[in-house]
Image 1 (cartoon, rainbow, N blue to C red):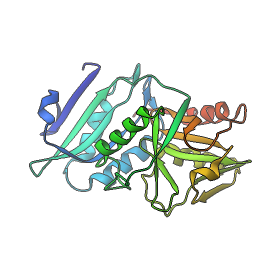
Image 2: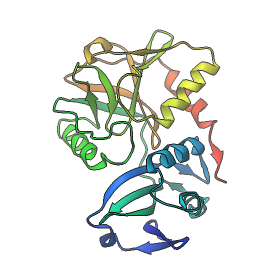
Image 3: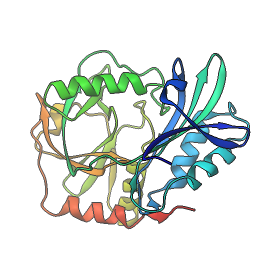
Length: 258
């Protein structure tokens, strides 16, 4: 396989495709995760989220998943992606093998002030193009990531990340009433917090109420990143050593691919 390749699941096998073979398609489910030298974080959670989103559109989705995992090299840094697409009413399962881009430990945010671009806010995949658009707008404003704000002004999630923050020694997350994708990385961090006896609170909060708070953006690619700025938003803070400690804790949860 090349370092960036696309494969369609057909008759029980992955078949290499040209990029042009995937025109006029609609993504109904997608998932991706970082693989470093054959290990990854919470693969079972990614699998379940993908299967739940895809539903029964592909008869042998389990076999497709297993074949995709087997196709990932066990050396190097990779960011594979699985998708279920619709093309002309027919469902397609697609595996993308991609080298991982450069990783970072920090990120700048910008609030998205327009209408919520998501049509399926609890499903990963259908809103890929819309989320890319608002992140591109955030980059033009000097940020790295866009933050979706609810109609009531509350922080919901990033275009490509979950948002968590700290109040003293307590970890906080957006209210469970706010529609968003169930982030595998955020779930892993919250599980760690519970294991260490750290209080976890869920809040409906506007950006201004995060003034001088330590804010994290979490994703399957970058893991935990510290927010170092919020364009036209709250000033941020960082407790020395906390980010490194939690990135190390999260890294220790990585397991070899099956």
